[in-house]
Image (cartoon, rainbow, N blue to C red; front, side, top):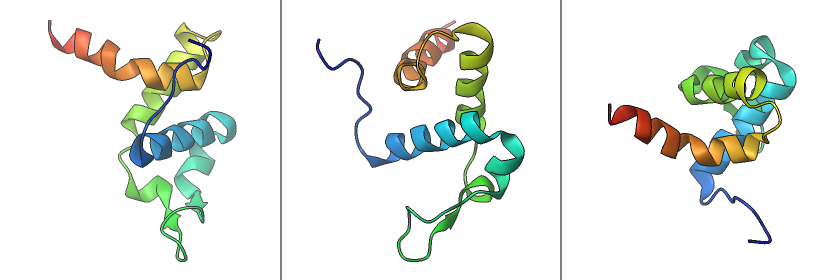
Length: 88
């Protein structure tokens, strides 16, 4: 209870970092982003090598629906929310 919501494993954390980058820098910079922190030593052109739907939806939720909630919390809850929506 002290630590709050935590993203586990590498892939979800990478997606969270991509969401943070999109939120902080905008879509045009996101699609031009070359991340040197992954695929060492070469790096990765992130904006052109991922499917950014999840990142855009998370940023949209943050900007228009739940502005007071942190991006970390939104990214942790999104699988549960989308699972609930998918059952209908």
